[in-house]
Every structure is written in structure tokens, then in C-alpha cells.
Image 1 (cartoon, rainbow over the protein chains, first blue to last red):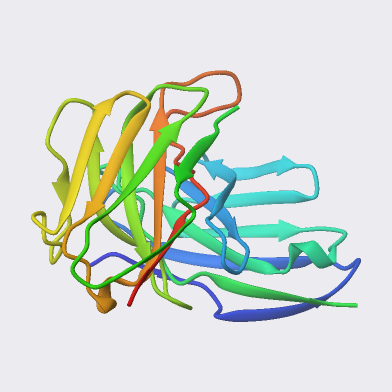
Image 2: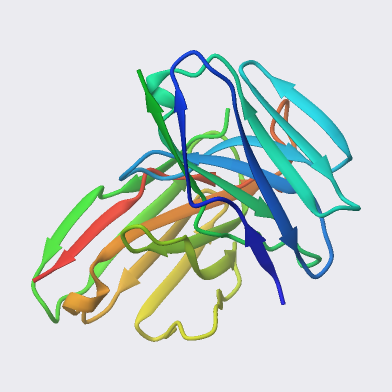
Length: 109
Length: 120
């Protein structure tokens, strides 16, 4: 079957760094997306990895290891507005995104 | 850019009525549009995938006669919830993906802001 494993909830301090891990199993693989979803809002696109390695985009970076079925999202210089759910969504061989429940990140002052 | 709009943002209706939700890609042509439903504190649930000019593909368990999808153009898809009941109350979100342009990757889904439906 297809599944995604992410921590349900994480807490971090404003100004700090946090890494949100994601392991996945899919039927085929065509890349992996990270989305941010604030409570009560729709998801917004953060990053897309299709090759192994680290992609950096401002305060956010995303890493992929296809052989390990593993990705992480790294958030630096945390701000209160980063409090949200972070969704790891791999794309299978049919180009369908597989959605899990995401990781709820709580930022404390 | 990759902006997707959705209208209306809020709907309150009586049980038995039909509700239409519009999804538009404002600055790109969407080859494919998706309709999701999300209940509180749960993951996104894909309802259907639609391509312009063809019939939508519904996920298992989603009634196609109840959730009518029309994808009339490369920038517009509509979802009609027919004979809505209280259990249809949810957050309905559309997304769109299209051709590669600038920083936009073809397979990236861009989401509309969502529509909250409350059926009384």
C-alpha cells in the first residue's frame, strides 16, 4: 500500500530551527511536495524535490533521499507565523499526490 | 505566478438544496483540476480529478451523481453538491496544475482558498 509517516505534532521556539521528517512508501515515485496549511486555510506550495539532495529556498529547505523513502523540511529562524501544519505529499507513478495528516508545528515565543 | 481563486468562500444552505462552487486558475491554463474535501483535523481527501473537456474521474466512495463536476475550460472547473445534507458540511478545496512556466513546475498543484459549506 501507499503511506506517509510524519510526526503528528512538534513544538519549537521562535528564532530556532526545526526539522520535520517524512518517510513514505508509494507505488512508483515522481517527486515529493511539501505544503504549508494554516488552520482553517487551504494548503500553499512550499517545495518540490524529485532528485536526491537539498533544495534551499529562503528560510525553508527540503531534502530528499529516494533510496531511503525519506524527506525532511527544515525551517530556520522560526517566526510565530510559521505555526501551521506541514504536509509531506509524495507523487506516485500515476502522478497522484498521496496525502497524510501532516505535522502540526507549534511555535512558542 | 500561480493563482487559483474559488467562489464562494462561505456557503450556508438548507438541506436538499444544491450548491455550486467555482474554481478558476487566474494566471495560467490548468490542464488538470482537483477537488478535495477536508474535515476538521483530518487529511485532505481527493474527491475527483478533472481534465478540460472530459469527464471527471471520481475517487472510490465519491458519488458522481451527487458531486457534479464540470471542467468547461482550461481556467474554470465547477463542483455542484446536489441535494446537500448536513453530512456534506465540510471544507471543499480545489487545486489546479498546468504547464511549466518560470518557477512553476507542471506537476505542482496550486490550491484555491477553499469553500466552507454548512448545510442546515
